Amino acid sequence: MGSLGWLSAGDGYEVALVEGRVAARATAGRAAGRQLKSLPKQVREHPEVERLRRFAEWLDRHAAECLAQVDTWMVSSLPVPTGLLARVWPDEAWQSVLRDLVVVGDDPDDAGFLRDATGSGELRVVNLDGETVRLSPETVTLAHPVLLPDLKELREFAAELGVVQRVEQIHRATWIKPDDLAENSAEVTEFAGGKFGSRFGLAARASSLGYRVSGGYATCTVRDAGRTAEASVWIGEPYWDGDSETGNLTWHDQAGRLLPLREVGPVAWSEGMRMAAALYAGRTIEEGKDA
Image (cartoon, rainbow, N blue to C red; front, side, top):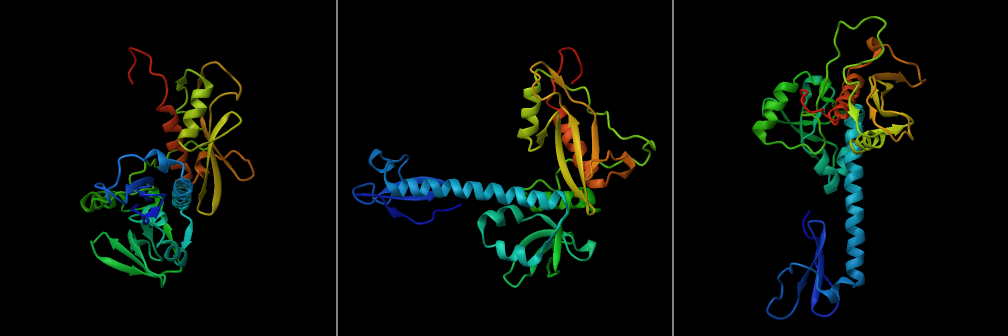
């Protein structure tokens, strides 16, 4: 984010937000017009500085909210009205999280990297042929990577273009559900038994990764093909102060029914496995054992 313009802050100084932080410059003397390395003492208490600080905090919160919202749209592959993208596009915080996400229009083959959204509701997208195409469907999906048939090609093309996505989409870790699941199986044991020095440490890891901790479980909720499923991993009794370990991974539907693995959708499967693997990765590795 650039400067938002310089404002007078008492005699001899001006202040502005530069790259999200309050900066000052002198208006007189030899250093006039030059940005100072730190805020002079007489400027720090000025009301204009406090106002800018509060504004910077609001911008940070707004940027975090935009990121969380777009991540939710992508994980759940929710149809997003094209007109909404066009409305929020001029906002720098929105644009930085939406730009270069792979969007899919009415035709699944219309996938491409989002480059622009015009006021008239038209999207400009760079497709796998390297062509900039214009799309104006009613809605688009910011597709979850497990649903992108050309994921490998998109990753290679992104590397060529130097694409950096703020929301982890095409480089997100994905798991494909196996076809040979036993008919009555309802839990995944692959990431169970990861030992942690304390239950608190395991819960803190879950929270820092963005997962909800509820009772004895770390959970994530995913909307998959119109149905909501909650993936959960047992992390130990809430007020237990001893060591703890990760349990099995299971999925429940909206009514709280345990889902047989065969009924778990592709996105819910991938996101649940991603959560379980990320928790397990933080386990204590005993000396002499393979990491």
